[in-house]
Structures are given as structure tokens and as C-alpha cells.
Image 1 (spheres, helix red, strand yellow):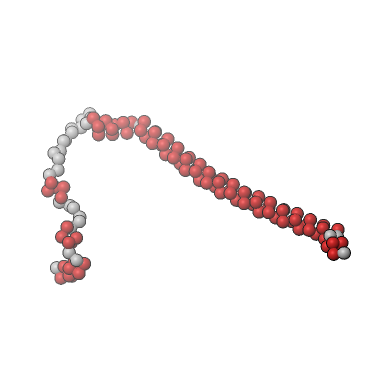
Image 2 (cartoon, one colour):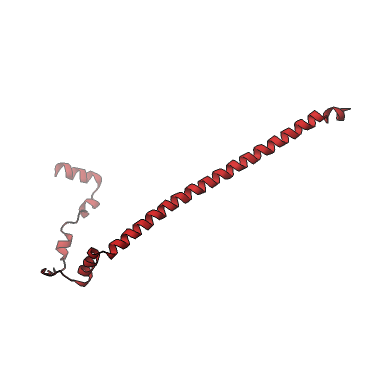
Length: 125
């Protein structure tokens, strides 16, 4: 008797509808998840593409600069000590140690002093 009341056509159709609803919801969530993943991949590829386009444009401009007469003249002057007509070249001697150390900014004595000593020296000379 209980079997006949539980397994009626309306109960079975309700269970079938619930199963279909759960299956449809799961497949919709799966599709949305796949779509989100693909959108993230597409966004990454677009960023990568724009970076590569900028890099290509930079390399193209650098190539044009390296082919230019200004760069060739600069390199001839720098590497081969060439000069333009009417110019005279002055070759300076290497800097001495005194000249190299003249404008050094870090004061070695301040590094050895404590913070209090540095403040006292600053305030009272």
C-alpha cells in the first residue's frame, strides 16, 4: 500500500523535474566557469599582445636610430676617435684620486657616530 502511494506518477514526475533542474544548474555553472576561465585567458593574451606590439615598435624605432647618420657619426667619434673637418681633438689625462674623491657624498665619520652624536654635532656644531 505504501509503495503505491509513494511511487505515483506525480511523485515520479516531480523527482524527474528536480533531477533535470539539478543537472541543468550544474551544467550552467560549469559553462559559466569555463566562460570565465576563457575570458581570463583572453585578457592575458590581449595584455601580452599589447606588450609585444610595444616591444616591436620600440625595436623598430631603435633599428631606425641605429641606421641613422647621427648614430653612425656618434659611434665613429666614440669608438674610433674620429672628428669632423675643422674640429680639433683634445685628449685629457685620467683623473687623479684626489679629483675622484673630491665630491663623494657619504661622510665616513657620520657612519661611525651614533644618532645622538650626529644630532648634537648638527645642532651645536
